[in-house]
Image (cartoon, rainbow, N blue to C red):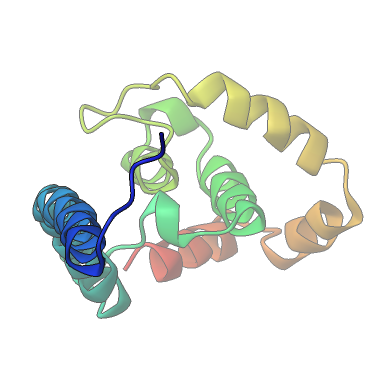
Length: 145
């Protein structure tokens, strides 16, 4: 014996299923909507430049080559870079020092990549551009405004 549905009963089942999916979708969207709105706000604000610290360059706004150039210039700007405020500011901007001026978890990985970068032709060209302490300091100052 097979059960036959009338058009009315079949339509009721379809509406009930559609209603359940609509309710489930609405609940999921209610949970996702704040996340979507927050992500949209962050993207919008970052596109407008809001969030950069006092107009300074941050590590996330620099590409890898720019980070290496800034680090190289900060090293070249002082005889004792670890004691230099310029070096600390550059490292904070790159994202390898914390706000207390101390190396963070990213520091060693960056320095390892920097050693490899420093043997590249681009690094040699850059070293010729910043061949004095004054030029190196000017480069860092210009890129940390």
